[in-house]
Length: 349
Image (cartoon, rainbow, N blue to C red; front, side):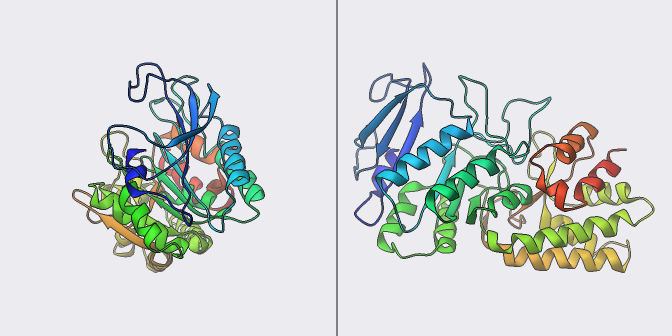
């Protein structure tokens, strides 16, 4: 919030924040533990929050999608705008429904309730649909200041109700988004479009030391989805599709190496398959993925050890438990619209 204040706000750029704290989190501005809504004001004191508390709303479940929708409804009623960016800042774990590893499920994990907003269960999509209904138009930008959310699966859902997604393929660190530089740039050019703002967010995060940040043109996601489906079907037509996928996984860049290695860079995976000996159908389909990916990734910033990341991940697990969640979860539109889940299930056999 001090970064936001350092970036400032004015008559053209209004920044509203809902923040929730737990006991023991900190003593800045008092050891408050409820949820509060602020309008950001310009301030250079990095040790104190100067912004006005517009509402104290008591204890809320930040892992409940209804809480997110209520915040946007309040914000839009108070300050309706021509363009709207929604930034979600907390833990993240891509599409995942949850399961045996519960450190971070989906995103917006509430440490008091233990809940989170699930992509795979459809909670994220329902929230976005309600938000679009409130605004009367899609979000210009949805940003995830959270780990591993620059995934094709997440972008498929975002694309139904937003124009641009700004997020990271891998883990994010304490620095996260550079709110100061982003707001300064937006105030200097309040007429920037959604892609420009998404790229500005990604550039600022990279300058702060984040390993990967990309801005995705969500209007191009349907074409990428078709290309992923074609690649999955080309691989499924092989005598050993599971083996082909496992080889591609071994030969491509993983973005969650410290944990399960389930999230792989889509461009790296497709490039491996394009150059493989699996035949013309696989090669052509892989080239289609790379061409579609080029249209989706509007901006991409990377640092070592992920300097070859291309902007979007895809789930490539051969763990039968997680492949089952990936395939059968109620909100898994990636499984409903493509054969990629069928490929994962074959690889898990």
